[in-house]
Amino acid sequence: MATSTPLRDLVLRTRSVRRFRENERVSLETLHALVDLARLAPSAGNKQPFKYSLSVSRRVNALIFPHLRWAAYLQDWNGPAEGERPAAYIVICRDITISNALNSDQGFSVQNIVLGATEHGLGSCVIASFVRDEIRKVMQIHEALDPIWVIALGVPAETVVVEPLGPAGDIRYWRDGAGVHHVPKRSLEEILLTQFREDE
Amino acid sequence: MATSTPLRDLVLRTRSVRRFRENERVSLETLHALVDLARLAPSAGNKQPFKYSLSVSRRVNALIFPHLRWAAYLQDWNGPAEGERPAAYIVICRDITISNALNSDQGFSVQNIVLGATEHGLGSCVIASFVRDEIRKVMQIHEALDPIWVIALGVPAETVVVEPLGPAGDIRYWRDGAGVHHVPKRSLEEILLTQFREDE
Image (tube, rainbow over all chains, first blue to last red):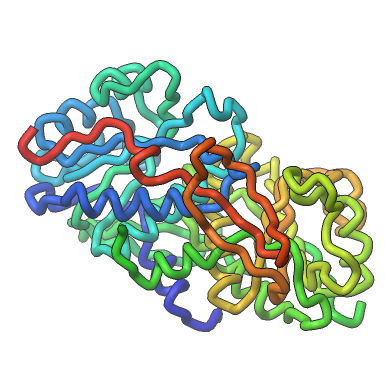
């Protein structure tokens, strides 16, 4: 298998976490450090159209939570119970006065944030399915800003493991009887296409 | 300013590089390690629709190069000269039989690759503007696979620095007389919107 490096260890530990120790608070300063990592990501045409709204407030978190959709594959689970909900949120918006393009480089910034969260001992879950207008209202986000992701954050209260796909090739994550969350990942062999070597 | 962490150092050093030491070769094994980081990124619905075609071949690299567009803001520069071209390429494709959605999570995998490249002492440039059909032909990519990014890689032959935006707020990168590439980044203050504190 692949050689371990500090980055690979961090990448491997950066899993979507959906249950948190809600009472262990996250500081705004930690969120600033994470947004700073997003700020330093490469950006198409260096336009840097992304802006960030933050909450570590219990009151505001309680207003955000009902508008998020959690874990489509866990059909008998409607999201984390009270006490296991996120302690912090980062809402990522595109400033449409800077760029209205539906490009993918926002993912660069998001990945920096979730890797940084892991480095800070936090779990995170990137949520793209949420009620935009309600999140906009709660976070007092201007109409020229388009909320595209909500990142939920907190100290993890669940274990998440990566494992190979089973023989049926099912990619759906699942939770076992002990509450461990399993994430099947395709093998390197499966995702590699053509390879042109040095002497070809 | 933000506290330094191992990840922040890596993020700061991960800049788009457009001139390389073309004769310093990159091994396929290094590209495998980078694709392995991409493999382990979070994926929407865990579908993992991305597949990867690789080249470290001088012959194939020479066929790829003419179909890439470089550095829109450097108008008197048509891309790296012979001897300064990439030593390796990773072409990222979406397998449309797995997912046809234009979602942004491909950026998670790309960011892992470019951070990994830096960790391996390589520079990288993520290119979204290229002649898709020609790249598909050169790399022998099946029609059910849609090439979305080309990542150019090699040992850097240029210095790239991040700096604050100037007073006019221009975000265009530029190259100075000594050939140093300057990337103006918006400040943390500029990209932060509303913030809800613990006691709010």
